[in-house]
Length: 167
Length: 167
DNA sequence: TATTGTTATACTCTATAACTATA
DNA sequence: TATAGTTATAGAGTATAACAATA
Image (cartoon, rainbow over all chains, first blue to last red; front, top):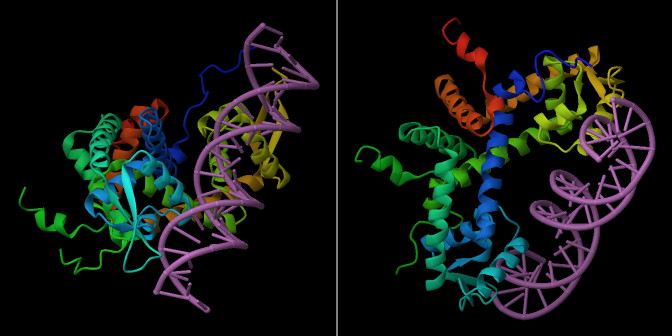
């Protein structure tokens, strides 16, 4: 036999390691998958977390705006909200000003669950970024947000710019 | 209350912007999708590029090792290689040492196409990272690879460490 | 019996279209 | 007519299982 003196099996090509498409794509996928799996054992999806997080900051969102933020089709959001509503974490109410709209709000239970998921997600991120120290993590996040902001202005955080000098 | 003087529609929640899962996940997805679309107009997929890149550095790979690097199921690779082979970009040959194996090699035409795709991907990455200067891009890539390496040792680049002082 | 490449199948997302009730 | 939410359907992408050839 004498297959190969130096085990070349499954070693990573330089070109792909040098490629941001490859590295960023895979890293994003890995982290997402990791988070999805861990949330699933808690009975939630990543979207559940995102929806709750959105509602925590601005209650009474309409379904369309939630879907837009998550880049989700409105039809996909329906099932998500159904699940959250069944568990009593959110409430849908008709908007009296425009009876076509539903305004969605977080319940007290929803807030509690969000707090739980928040710490879970935080732990996942901490483990994922383990090799980086606090300063590097901040730098990484800053660079990512800069790029994200360039492609989607909604990522802009005016208050962060203002607060940059204070902390 | 006084609803919201500043149009709140589809604005991004702080918590999600602060979340690495959210930002990294979306950014990776965006870049990947962008690259896929642009490559598609050239008649290729992102996987095509990756396969060609792998073969350029180490010819005569076996299908299993290629699939492993790309985290692809071996059955998925079959169709990919079929497409590349039909276009005369790669060649499959039975390994005489182990007739179960197929060794895959790049043809001259495959090398030419890879060069084309390479510059295309490079351009996509450049555009994507437009807001960052050269130093920031390097830093970002460095951080990403550090994290990637932590989760998958094959991302380690011993030669880069060695070459760090020379160039 | 285990492994390589292959084929066939099933399942999960996501995208699209059609429907209702309101405007 | 257009829009918000909903439902139903279809497609792509991915994962799983079974198979033939070889070890």
